[in-house]
Length: 427
Ligand code: FER
Picture 1 (cartoon, rainbow, N blue to C red):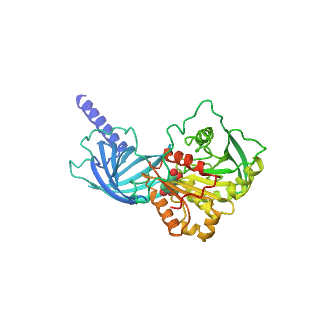
Picture 2 (cartoon, helix red, strand yellow):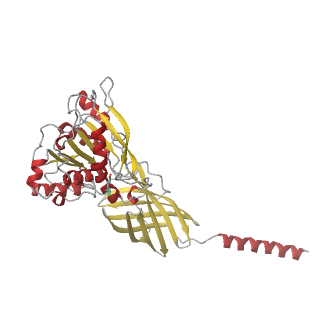
Picture 3 (cartoon, protein in one colour):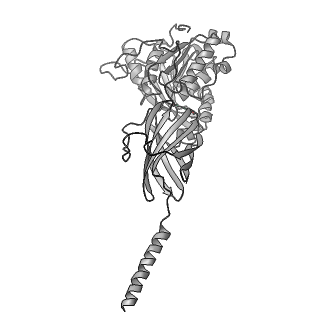
């Protein structure tokens, strides 16, 4: 009886152990510090990953360094299964969060990683386990969620040349703060039938204070950045507040500001704008703008339908669109501005075949960028080409990164020049 009992208990124990062994996968040892370097679109990145591990559960964080520009990165959804490790880095990007997905194969003191920034970029690199004491910071405690993820500047602060300085003083304090007791323009959302995209699409339209059908107004087409839509220039851009304040101070010519959706696709946007074939969808907006948006605006508002009274400006992807579309269509636009223009920007040499003619047609060509913006090289080389071709333009280097404070300031400055006699200082 006793023997049988013991046998049964042992059998049970063996059974339980066997079940545990079947139900649990082993996990490679990743605890510690790992160093990696890899090339990306924005330059060489150095990462130091630190993982804490308890069996097959792990947490991690990293310190990322691009040309001496450091940021702490929280690693989410860390999972271990046999020799595989996966985790996600959340990259804050203009109000949305981009997932950077890592998949690694652990082999002793090396992890072979694939790093996917949507379908936008894939990098492969090897991380090597570091010697003890090479942790990224003195405090190797469990990762604390950073209160603020690094600014999405797409790289380290740029190198500034002697010409890379502001053309204007910054906007005064409060330029983007709604004031009481001033006349306000009217903002509305309207729908138009886009033949180019094949769907009904939305526009935000700002009509200046005192808008009257008895007058005809010039129009600024104001384009948003990647991941934005027809509302981005209102929130967070506050274009209506900025314009209202300019009018209250008699600083701008009454104009209509049209804020379209520059992502020309019939498909709804996905969670990751970098995955969205951004170059194609933003380039496709040229046809929608010329063939659908402008005719709609000119048939529904009291506007001057003439190139001298049409301006196009935008931020980042919208800056690239404005330079590309504006300079490619000087018979449609006489005023063109790019703020912190993105990698979708074509080269000035490609866009301007005849510099003499461009100078005759352009009333204003504005190129600006923040002095901390990792995309600065795009504006710098654009401006270098303009200078070489003797195309008259304004080059304004703002202070700040790839962020709205810079773009709001640019709108404040540019709006004061539009539809006046400005040709701008040739610089
Ligand atoms: C890129 C970096 C920035 C890119 C687009 C952006 C598609 C756009 C930024 C923005 O619109 O704010 O490499 O490629």
